[in-house]
Structures are given as C-alpha cells and as structure tokens.
Length: 102
Image (cartoon, rainbow, N blue to C red):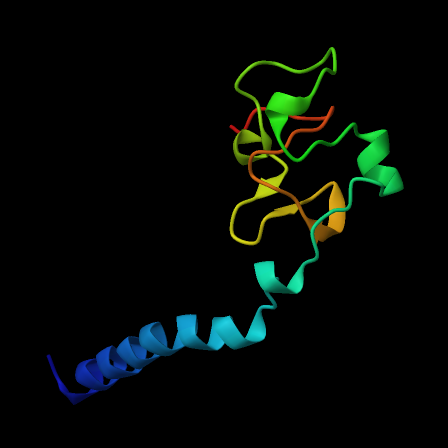
C-alpha cells in the first residue's frame, strides 16, 4: 500500500470514529426525564382508554399480555408513545389502539 492508500485509510478511519460522535450532537433526542408522564385526565388519554397498568383495564379490545412495552407505537428509549406526542407512558400501560410490535 502506497502513501496515498494509507492516507485514505487514515481519513476514512477518522471519519468512521467521528461520525457517531457528531451524530449524537446533531440529531435531537428526547430524554425520558424531559417528558412528563401522561395524565389520566388528558383528553387524548381518555379517548384512547389509556391505563397505566394493563391489568386495570376492562376495555373489550384488551388482549391478555398486551401492554405499551410490546406495542409498535411505544419508544422504549424515552418511554414515549408516537400517538401521544410530548408525554411518556408506562411500559406496563395499555390503550385501545395497541398494536403488536413487529
């Protein structure tokens, strides 16, 4: 490998190391501490029949074993639900639009 090949290798190596670090500062991420918990009296929570513990629901659409943790709309990294932006929900929670995670 000649000097040009080594230079390109070093440049690519530096880029590969720096890219994830740069992405961390460029891509905004929501933090669990930054999201307030979804209040049960929130109109959207009421409309979705949200409960903080799936065991507490009496909703006809409830399937045993379903909860926010295994729902496709739940974001485990920050406890958010894509259907209710700006709030965190409990992993043990449940709502009427629960859909099994793929």
